[in-house]
Amino acid sequence: MNLYTSNVVPAESASATSGARAYAWIVFALMFCLLLSDYMSRQALNALFPILKVQWQMSDTQLGSISGVVPLAVGVLTLPFSLIADRWGRVKSIALMAALWSVATLGCAIASSYHEMFVARIFVGVGEAAYGSVGLAMLMSIFPRHLRSTIAGGFTSAAAFGSVLGVSLSGIIATHFGWRWSMSLMAIFGFVLVIMYFFVVTEKRLARTRPGEASGTPTYGRVRLTPRALFSSLFPSRSVFCAYLGSALQIFIQGTLFVWLPSYLNRYWNMPVSKAAVVAAGLVLVSGMGQLLCGVITDRISGDSSLKRWNMAIAYCLVLAILLAIAFRLPPGNLQLALLAPAVFFLASSFGTCSAIIAGATPPAIHGSAFATLTLFNNILGLAAGPFFTGVIADAVGLQDALRWLPLAAVLPFTVYLIGRWCYIAEARRN
Image (tube, rainbow, N blue to C red; front, side, top):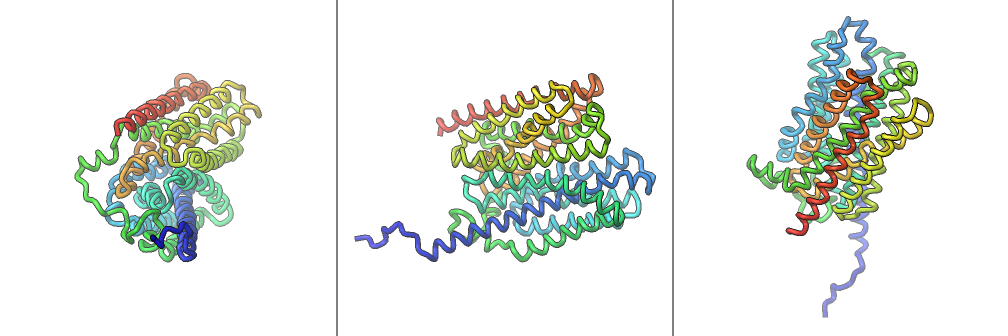
């Protein structure tokens, strides 16, 4: 007779599981705050443009360059740095990146000229380059599969919250204490988080937290892939390519609205610049909340089913298109704002869904590189392309008409998600 058939979980095992879950959420909170610091450091300088323009006699081109060089560095370096982190170690890489962007932010505070500020901002981008992808990969490794959309949506929503906090707090601090203190306090916040991270997050503790990890070794660094094998692992199927592409095309809409909403409110609502900025910031916060909650909803409905995740991505995109189409056909006013708010809620709704699909189809050892690839798609085809092409159309027909055509852009990710769902079903049948 087998004496070990009982389903009762030993008290020690239950206690260990509870402790592992608690530790995973502590790590999540710390990583969320680090991403918050990342975007606060990135966006804080934007609120200081009027001061720097007068104090250093800077042109708009120079102001734009010290802002744009950060996402440019992130876009160029995210994939190679993520590859290095996957091999060298995610825990060490994250600590180094956070320390670097904090030091560089402090460099911005003590810069005495445009050229010094430009160099410091380059290093802010270098430090931030792979944090989002590597941080998400590390979090995915310590949470179960059925929470992947929640974790992806919740973690990346810190970008929206950090952007708003960075701009608003920077302006307030600069008004009372001077612009150098704005950047200094952003750097100090980063240093405090790095110290906390150093003492809280270790490879051994993460290994004990990973679901299904019997060994205490990290999941990265186990394989050494040739470039061809790496490419095949990053793009293992047509459905995964559709997840990369669909996410980027939906982010195209988000990037457009984040950049052009303040101008739209100023030109067509006759709002003062300051009020337009506040209203736009409120909509950005709604978008961040939507990114978080849509991840939670997706996990609740989908569980471990990738097919249901595709269905959720399609549904989110359809709702986004309908709400935007109605909102921008209405005249400026409270009713339009009432529809814009739920519309922006769904702007990044599919990011957590697509992240979970990609994580489920790629090897854990290269998840940092996989999410870096997703970041690359999102930045080039989404955040960079959206504002630019909308600006070109606005020059031809006006900003209001350009935004009225924006809901048609949702047809592209909607179509890609439909194709991805069809490809996934075909691939599942073959396997």
